Structures are given as C-alpha cells and as structure tokens.
Length: 71
Length: 225
Image 1 (cartoon, one colour):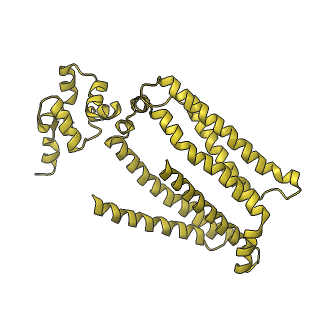
Image 2 (cartoon, rainbow over the protein chains, first blue to last red):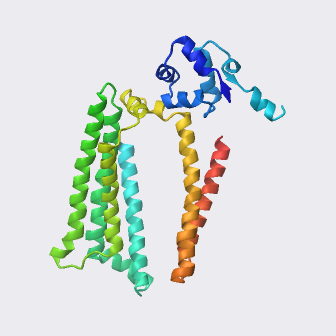
Image 3 (tube, one colour):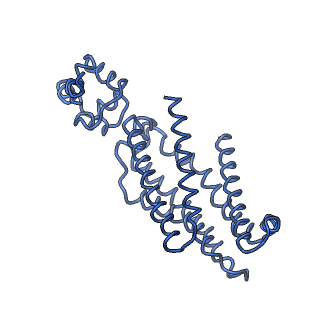
C-alpha cells in the first residue's frame, strides 16, 4: 500500500525517531511503513493521520489495492 | 514476585517429573519391570545427586534471576552503555556459576568413585552451559538494536515490541514450525526407518503432538480474534 508518510513527515519537520516516539512504535516500523513494506493497523494508521491532521485515506493510498481486486 | 516464585517452582516440578519419567523409562529399557523401575529411581543416589540436584541448583537461580535482569534493563534514565555492560556482567557471573556447578557434577563422579555420567546426562548439563555461553557472547560482542536499547532505557519495552515486531515474531514462528516438520520428518522419521531400521515412534509422536497443539492453539486464537 502506497502512502504519503515520508512527504508529510518531512513537511512537518519531524524525524523518523520523533514520529516513532509520538505514535509509540519503533523507528524501524516507521521506516518499513514509509517504504511500503509494512501496512500498519487501523489504530496505528489513525494515530499517524491524527499527527498530521489528515484523514487515514489522506495518508494511506489504497486505490491500487482496491482497484486490483475489482472493488 | 510471589507469582514468579510459584511459576519457577512449578517449572522445576515439571522438569523433575520429566526427569523421573525419563529415568524410569531408561530402567524399563534395561529390562526391569515397571514397578521395580519406579521404585529404583526414587532410591537411586545417582538420580538424586547427579540429575535432580544439578537440575535444581542450575534452574532455580536462573529462573529467579530473570526478573532481576529485566528490572535492570527496564529501569528508566540509565546510561545506555552502563545498562548493557551491567547486563553482560550479570550474565557472565551467572555463567561462571553455572560452569562451576556443571563442572562439579560432570567431574564429581571421578572423585567419588562412581562411574562417569552417561552421554545423555552429560549433554543435558552441557546444554545449560552452551546456552549461557551464547548469551554472554551476544551481550559482549553483538551491538544491540538501538530501538531495543532506547525502548528499555525509557522503561517502555512495548514500544519496541510493537505491532510490526509481533507480526515478525508470528511469521517467524510459523516458518520455524514448517522447518521443524521438515527436520523431524527427514532427520528423525526417515533416519529411523532407513538407517537404524527401527519404527519411528518418537518422531511420529512429536509430529502428531505438534499438529495437535497447533490446531488447539488455532481454535483458541480463532475464538479470541
């Protein structure tokens, strides 16, 4: 799943470490989410979206996944 | 602490029961009847001195020591290097103690005039020491994951053990399970059938037990989630 996390984080001037601290996960988890290797849970996605004052779909782009399944 | 003590005593009890069963089965294999074997094990000096005593002496301090290590590494505000060096030092002291105890029970029979321990008894004791040697080496030479150190320093290990980490552990556990099936089947099952030409009862029992436990756990988690 693609996401805008890296862009939003850089725009906010946050480091990966800062973001990890604020949502209560390890820095490695933030790295994995940014690179698209790991899809976070709804709760973690919601926490991240709240920090950037965005909706979940404003941060995580599920269009391709939904399209691929023909939904 | 009381719960931990109870749990430690419980684990030791289970371990001792398994040792008792093991020694009884060994006696049966040697040609004694079931009743004789059950009695003989309880009156055997070898069993109490060279199996039960080392087991209690090694396991009990180890189990009691674990919360202390955990507290040491989770206390907040401590300097990173200090914490890990202290942990390594603690493991080393415990490792030396374990080495001394294991050494005593391995070499002891030579001085008491009793026969040297059998290979399986030797291996059982040696495994304790090998485990400790690996832990100590890891603590001294492997740089710990910075996220893990930070999480422990902040007294918040949940931060490291987050949802991604739990997924990693779960996936690794399933992969290990598949590998275990393959190893037991190929090394144990087929080895017994084609090399030693005995019925692979033990391997088959292990595989069946693992499958049963797996299905029980699947049902349990399916109800929970």
